[in-house]
Length: 124
Image (tube, rainbow, N blue to C red):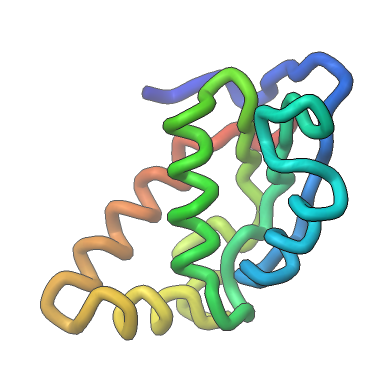
């Protein structure tokens, strides 16, 4: 379901942005600053630009979506300019989805991800 364009998050929280498919970097950040939902990182905001460019962009997006499903009141995701189909075609996310999911299922999954992106708020 669509949420507000602007969502409010109470401090304290950790903000991670422009991760661009760098799963290893995000895992290192969790190691340094705490895993979402823990005392060290009670609330986390992924401030857009989750995909495009990185080697593990599909895996990173799936991990972030899984965290959001598991902890909806502790994990927040904003839509960046790379959560857009045109940007995904230009910068590699579309290709990554097709490679990861296969030519038969990949296009439909890419479209579903794009639909999910359209529900993300623009700011927190």
